[in-house]
Image (cartoon, rainbow, N blue to C red):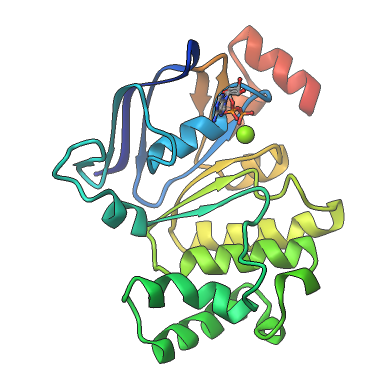
Length: 242
Ligand code: ADP
Ligand code: MG
């Protein structure tokens, strides 16, 4: 059963049509990496999946719920979708623990005590047990991003969306974040990852999607897309980034 179904997805900003008809499915436990040039609509695509951006055409179905159906409670759907951004977006005035505990407590999903336990377990999982009391400003970029992942996991989502999670990091910190994502993938998390880390995509993705000009130009197993790209635009993009 597909967890995410995207049909004919279109998105315009004013008269700039950014997504021109995207069709795609993500199955449970699948890891899909989305690659493509800057401005090709990758972030917009991800943001339409949880309605951070409102689509202008087509539909998105998450766990058999059409997210635009008035009967669908989009907040419920979103609770099940963790999102991690390039720039972490941690709450600067909360310490690490509070950042992770905030949503589950605020939304009444967990008591303070439960949320704290969850947060400590997640911090251990991302290798930051010693940073519970630290504030975001006291962390490196890699540490902030691992906290952001822990925070997204605190709601116990079964889908995770990542938008260039390592693009703002110094090179020496990329590995620690990709390592956490790799663990998640191995544990069976359903994931969509916009990334420029081609080595990671090749290794971890079940499927790679190449977007250009508002369309999915090519998709397939990583060994096919990277090893034997079929479309001229894929070939020329990969020539530039590999
Ligand atoms: P990518 O993530 O592949 O770099 P984006 O989805 O961020 O691409 O952007 C695709 C296009 O959509 C760009 O031309 C960008 O300027 C435009 N765009 C994105 N977000 C907005 C917005 N909020 N308002 C207007 N235009 C936007
Ligand atoms: Mg982007």
